[in-house]
Image (tube, rainbow, N blue to C red):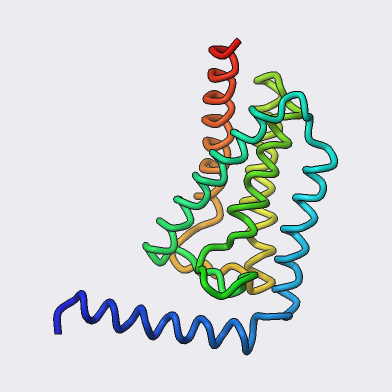
Length: 178
């Protein structure tokens, strides 16, 4: 049997166990409710507070950070650096609540409220430290994030660099469009 056939067989088994785990242990568990609540609450807050005059730039920040988080999550999952056992839906292995809610909404709010570079850097550094050393360990404690070959301190500079890069890109786009 060649590697392609073995990979297909393992992928089919994984999909079967993932679906079984979702419907037997994940759906309606407290982790599932936390994940759903985080996703819905963050987007509700964002809708209520977003600066509609800067909506285009703010949405670009959200799209770029969400894309970056999704790609990084795929890399980490592919390298078996971490695993997310609890999802809102069974057909994904990514923690979509983080990739599509926590990350984009947080960076959009940082971009909206901290327009000057100095305050943005301070706010982004604070968020990065909070996310890496408080939120991630909390998700581990709740069983929602399993670290296999990763350290919390790896995350902080990634969160920080992501914020800085996105602000630089969007500020540059805004400057050139005016």
